[in-house]
Length: 330
Picture 1: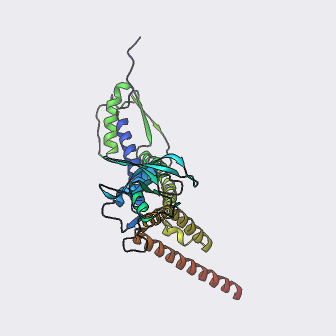
Picture 2: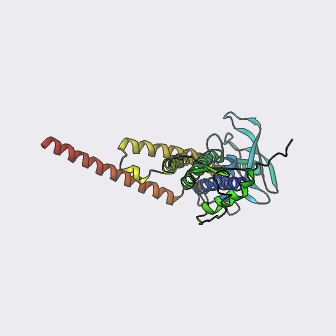
């Protein structure tokens, strides 16, 4: 038997690296948005808002507690033990780097405790903070959106390149290196000249026209839809400027309502954790009361987008009324 020919594509490693880089880039963009949405107000200096949001993003839940050594801290957590009447774990394993503590979940179900009993319970109870009411992490959904965007972007890249080299070259295996060098120069926008008629002869080199259609523009529109869907999921206003003029009042209100509900699905559990923390440690109504809110810049952007949309809708309605009046009088 003859020696088996090696048909490995040695340039495929570069494509894999580009695929991974594209996917990771989209995932990082979503992560930065998700981690920047909420502002924790009045957190004790011993707590860390960045780590708190990271825990919620990746794990779906975290814990707030008071430790004898560190004071008020926030950690990762995992439910254990039985569940209470509300379906929540009765105990949480609160852990972080070089820290571990098994705590009882604070629920406020025992309001008739004395001050000494309350003080004694501070060091073995904790507050559960949930990313949403199901305590699901954000990252799993963002990975799906990033994957779809990665697929669309790489397809778009390949389609653009196909317009540049809409042919397949067929040659003997011994000509592989020659063809790779030729394509490298062609793809790199470099002029190339080969004077060897044997290498470029009809018997040694053939081409097949792929007739690849240009669809990158359609794929780009598809990417926008995925991106907007991801932002809607996060509760971020994403009405595109080119679409505003085509929106009617009901469509705009429906979109804003969905965005608001998604935003509230993240905000409400955080606010409940703040309420429990303030209640447990006697901070309610004081200047040390903690809270969480949507970052003011994001809130202002949403208000501006809504205002612009309403203005465009009003202008469109006025134009329609003018047209109807002209038709009636005409």
